Amino acid sequence: MGMSVIISAADQDDAEQLFRLQYLCFQSEAELYGNYRIDPLVQTLESVRDELATDLLFVARLGDEVVGAVRGFTAEDGTGRIGKLCVHPRLQGHGLGARLLRAAETGLAAERAATRFRLHTGHRSEGNLRLYRRAGYAQVGAETGEDGVRLILLEKEAPAAQEYLASA
Image 1: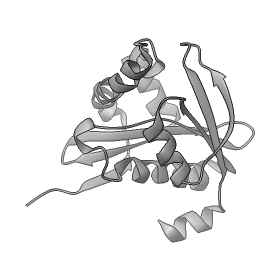
Image 2: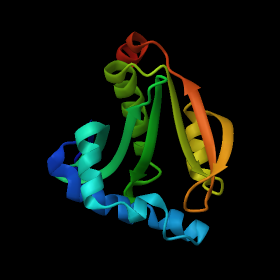
Image 3: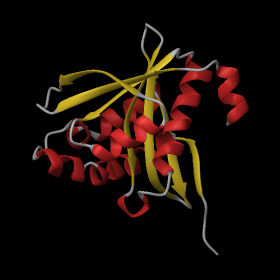
Image 4: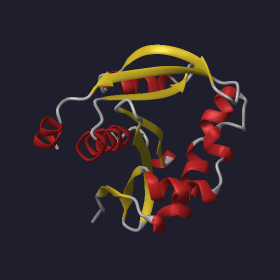
């Protein structure tokens, strides 16, 4: 009998698995850009622990294994910033990324009063761009990250928290 993937809030005990998963998942992005200094690959374990203490982090669990993750926080202007969405390579293409994105949106709207959501991805990351567009995001700009990668900025308005809770 197979196990179901469960989405839940991350906790400090997940730090090392998150750190390793992030490093594994972002290898393909680094290869796509020929740049192994992208933020998810140079982030320290201590920085992941700091994010666990302050941000909303959600993980996808298959049994005891963390197989996906996403994180977010709400900026002072009410924008929910979503980042570092990743799914283990062996589980990609099965809707897990969309489920994690929805968990981050729901959490940011309900728990952190986000009024809109913003995220970014590299300009060559077609799979990511498709996922975000299917989820209702539209391009609002572009910029070059500190690592030199050209980023597409995407945003969408957040429905009222009650709408999220009713559809969750």
